[in-house]
Image (cartoon, rainbow over all chains, first blue to last red):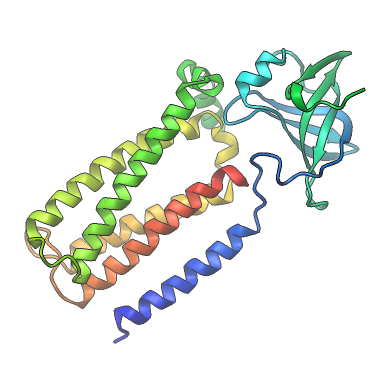
Length: 129
Length: 154
């Protein structure tokens, strides 16, 4: 019979593999996962989520869907952008920072522009004109 | 999917989705539940593995089991609330899926322990079988914890 010690080791290595798999997932909290320079994305809205832990938009750019992170719902709503503010299909411009992982279609926006209206979800981080 | 979308539209769920205080507080309650749950589980398993011999087996395991079950109930309630605000997205989150699978395995592990290596009172017998289950239990619950932490990062 295999000893509990050996089974622990086997199980521990399984956990190790699990951790390695999960570690590939890039952390999307804060700004550490994004580029320093500004990035601009223009497309049509595919999905709107205004809620915790932070609001997101899915933006269709030439048949590729980008995930755009916004601020937490309270800050996003305070910026004037609510669930009913824009509709799926609207043209949108998102300005912010792109993911460091170039294979990932993902960015975090500081400002979004819909229908001529500008919403600064991170007013302290918007580019100075 | 329609069922999950319907959950997202419930009034209390909508309120939680955009709340400033409620969501972090439910989140904190979920963490509290998990902390208590893992404390109960780990101490219970360690006692079965032969550590903490100063604690009388029967009363200690009974207490830890009660603590763990209560905390599990709290974790399920708070976890379901956190899940509900964006159910149709979280259901496809690989970390969430793996977490649910590991919880199912942990439940199965507990069930088999009860059926094969416990006495009439439901006390684990001090033999190798029970130690196996205790070892798996520790690893599974730590796996659940790690998966849960990763849900927000995928």
